[in-house]
Length: 271
Image (cartoon, rainbow, N blue to C red; front, side, top):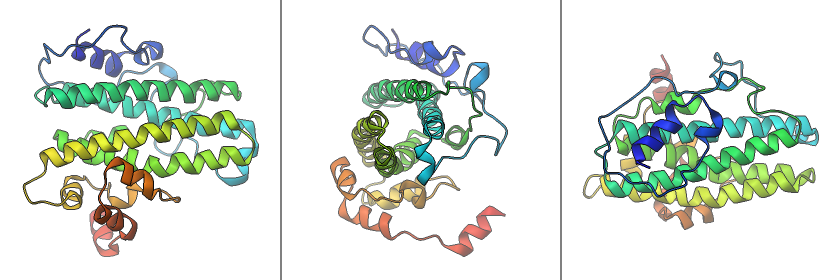
């Protein structure tokens, strides 16, 4: 199968099973084709993006004692993983001129995203909630529409969304463990391990594309599109060792820990 065909299948199909099916044969990239962008991914009717603020909020704390609330958490995370998968397919189609190694590496990560989506959707169903039975948001997809270069993609999705997931996966693993849901906790631990490799992938290509002499931090921050900013790349339980394993420098990690919002800048940019 051609890489473009796989990307089109993931991005444009309205059949969820097809979107989440890993190719049974090795991918080739002989015909990248012309650049293609769409305003919305193809999705089945029950997973179309909802109006702003209608999707359920992530459960917290004692809510995890209720199996249905745990199912809602998996439902939200399944949609996040599906959006990440669709964004990656969009990047392959939008930037056919990107290096072959980047495109092949991105395809391998897409296989992980397919598996993550399936894991969350299956666990959601086991806990009594079908995937697509609640409204879903478009936060990750909407921010990805601003990516004008592959550099902006690696700065935005691997190093922000997946970077933050280094923390969130551990946070939710602990929430599930606290109520005895070992199956859900194991899913979060497995995804955590994958996210380390995904952040490493983003960092590798940030270093390939940044300007000579530019620090990783400066290149990353300059490639972000507002309102995405460094504070979005961390959670509550900051995982320093995971970031070291992904290859982030001590300077980068320290800056990420210490980063605080500039109220004046934030106020100006939100107007």
